[in-house]
Length: 274
Image (tube, rainbow, N blue to C red; front, side, top):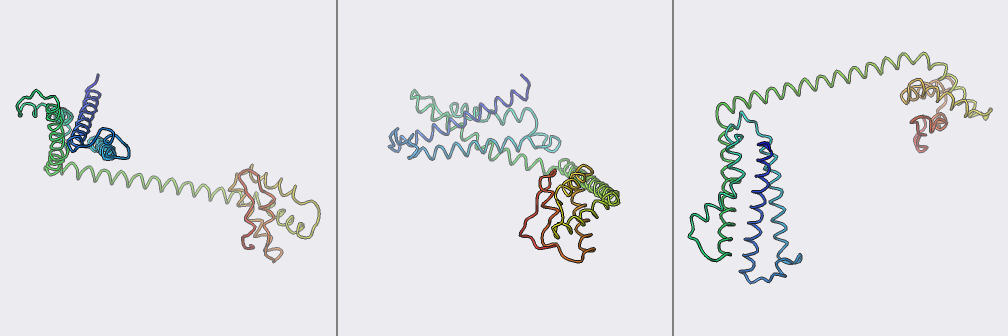
């Protein structure tokens, strides 16, 4: 078993011991207050407090694990050392041992268990809540740690700046390629746009079966460049119709005819005319 896995196992065991100690003391306290077992373990009674306590401990364990995993070894040389992490993880057990050593032995099993649990809670609170944050703060104030942290912050900002510039260049390249494609397609789409404008005018006059021809043109645009090509052709045909026939389009016939071609969807009929 690797040292990392061993420390993880010890941390889980100590957290479980701390949790059991807290639950045990809570139950003993309720019993000494005169509560019956059915009331202690009833979901509608005082066990709500136990559930709340368990939830807080679980959240605290997750937070401490995340916070410790994010520490930089060179900035926290003591708290990131193996010896300190072992001390940190076994502190609940050390508290139980210290409590039994400090207080005289008793034959009462309940009193022994209360002494164990009280020592575990006290040592865990002292190490996890008071001592560990204080040591971490002192480490952050040391000259070597401050120097490395400033350097790390500068390097992080520089890396973020480079990533931002790289993303901006990529976006600019994509926009440039799209613009070039737009200009290259312009001449190829001109005859199709002209024909669509004519079909729109013919449809308004009720001349012939227009829709199959419009659908064929839309499918051609889709094969040439996908949805962007279709939008470009649609815009060109609409502008050409307005310029040639000098009247607005109250209905987007082209958009309706193309519904279902590729990713094209028919327009909202409630929109204002072009």
